[in-house]
Length: 352
Image 1 (cartoon, rainbow, N blue to C red):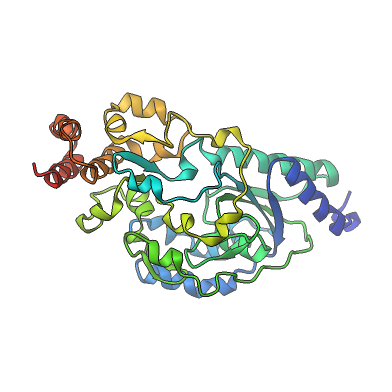
Image 2: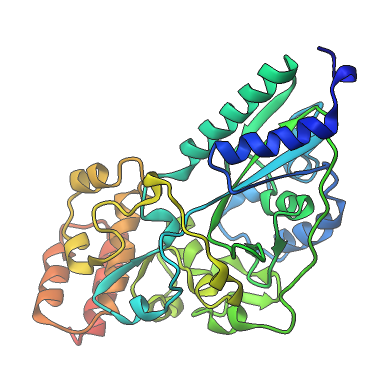
């Protein structure tokens, strides 16, 4: 079958139906025009807000022009998959200073492989229906402005906290894309529904938001605990509290997340108690235990040294006890110079 013989409206409808059958909560289609995002992205880089994420500076033309990333691309099929396992959006776990807070998305298995596999299955169904076609799947794995493309497709709008927000599902979801050379009909973009609300801007522990939709990533706890590979600046350590991998504050207070939809994906269920773990227990893992217990987890990508660094800061912010001080002292001379610096800081917080 040639593309000229394809009923594109019917195919677009089928693609959305197949996507739902494969476990995506929504599928939408956009063109490749990201010109509205060029200036803000280049300005963000110019301000140095990307910090040590040098990869954000690379392949700018491919990032801003999807048809250069995958030649022949005419449309982008964007998908979202919900990952929330609870409807309560509470800050209470952040007040339990002796427990580790790990961002919700990272408590289960790494989502990349799961979504990529589903996108490939979607591509296979399209191919079975129309024959060979050009495509490439992406899941946060290449220079792709996924939130911009998802916004253009109508999956939601980029909120003041820079997250994509959907008025029927909030923001607890993953994104993926299928670039294709099929000239499918495109969907309409949604408008911004943040209004005058600034809850996300006001809650940020480190004042990472320069303004609405403008974040200085070098101040963001997610950046500090995941992307940064050197010492965490002292000015941010107290504000980190018990957040040892990522930060959800700006999503927890977003009013739109009252519409959170729960995920039925078993892979997103917490593993090894990472939704409610004791800081001292996690700090006690040796490197082999870390590798074993983070297998298939997004946490593994930061490595054992940064994991220990983050936990040391968390322990410095915990309630003073003999157990915590003993755990820190025990690791003091067994750690790398970078981790040792954070342990020493933590001990100082407990008067040592």
